[in-house]
Length: 306
Image (cartoon, rainbow, N blue to C red; front, side):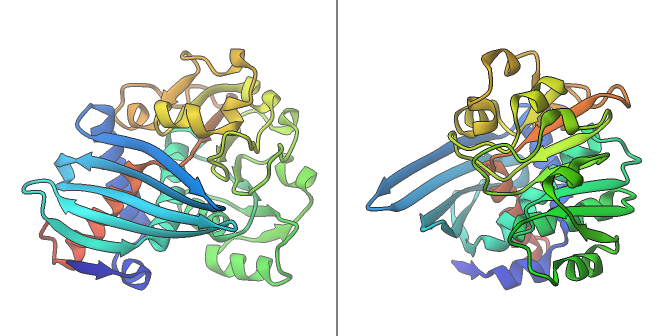
């Protein structure tokens, strides 16, 4: 069984290829042609073990992601199996896949929920995920400015991110970041809302991806209330893990307001319908993403053969 490193992943697939295979995976899931396992967390002595997985017959793969969390640091591994005969195909150091797939799914959601002419992006949190979101959003939309709010950002961040994205980048306060922003990405580890929901402008799209814990949230109730619809990867997992929704007033998180990403991609639910509406995507990360992306890497390393 082959072991595939993060460096091999980065050298094998592009963000655009990641977006394409994930879009296909979510369309299959939306049509009932794939299945997922919800995340299971087990903890003792301050060490946490988490597992989640998926079965995607149409892409020829089955797999599971397993990772540890210790003092806030993650170590990811993916195990990939063949869907036709169940044989073990490969193991992966899954840091690169995790970085790629989260931003790719935000772009997939944004293509259906954001305005196509979005020009200003606000980014809260410029860690690994935040930077990748900036790069993928800049490639997908005609951005003319990225505003970054991150109290821990190094002095060189703006120049580095501007070089990576090809878009002017400014470091600003939390209040200044969201003002007039067409796309807002929250990629922080904040336990409390990062801005006031009334600051969102009409027509904006929010991708909240920083937390998958039920006791933390990046968005307040006002942001949720103003959203015409809330897209999630998978309701059974999101409604257990997403503090943004778990801690919200129950009237804001109703079946009528929630839509799964697979339904949007498969065309079973409409995306943005009015240029003035505020739309929201809440991500916690699901096994379908990891398995589909690992499958793509494996197939490309095999010369296109599953």
